[in-house]
Length: 368
Image (tube, rainbow, N blue to C red; front, side):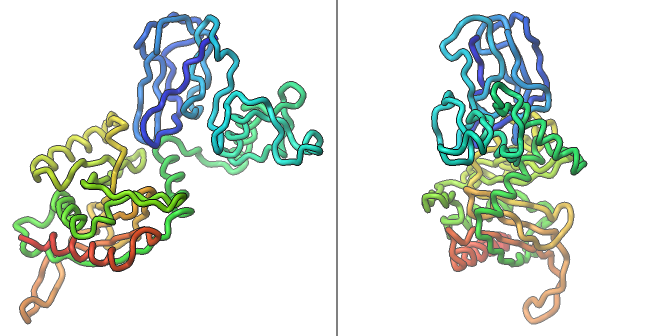
């Protein structure tokens, strides 16, 4: 059989959940015909057939999660990769490697550890299943994908509750990754908006002010790779803007914020929000943010400790604007005040750089 594998869905998208099959085994399909809809951490994606042919087998049921490079379907006929097992291998390696033993020295592993393919081993690691506790149902005790999935399902059944999927699952993974990798520090400040003609719709003004702050302290507009201790600075600000939805948190990216007019940015943000609400936003519009803004104040709240998601090194939180009594020109006055929170990765950014960035942000926001 000739396998069609889950294609690369874009930067950072290494897995997808099967939402709906549009074909079945035995169907004749033609090139570019829609065969399956999948959900990634970013959006719903329709995948077309790569060529004409007769479908011999579908890999995975609705609700199953597949990784990039794993088979989606097989065509009838012979091919050089017939029988290949494809999966993500930790640290690289040949996906067609022979079955091997896990967790024991060569002289004793036949007696102490189950047998599993690299793809099944990786699946077990991802699902938190201990291979040593499984009795394989395959030939000669081979642990199969079904064995691992059944063990994971059994653990979920014991715990109860609802399995996280799609965007919420991605959020859980990203937050755990951030907690494991980032060294977060948060500082706070306030912007006095009394010079604004209208102080109640600050999103675009915030974006332009963040771009100005990036000019003052460019290191906050960077990506950092902690494995090789390398930092990559960006010439333009591609601002991720957190959007709350019933399905979870989406972060579409507003491109080149510093180089576009306020009107253009406002129209672009409106399009992104509409696409997010309709779940029709292209995956590429959710990738490549160089810095993120969480405008949670539109819902509720004043200050926060927003979470930096690698490889970014900073995130800005904007709280709700409040009328407050301030000292102005020696007298009490009531001004609209915007509370701000800046969390930065202290591995890559110093406290001085973060403070100067936040000061530049406040100065830019306080202009008429």
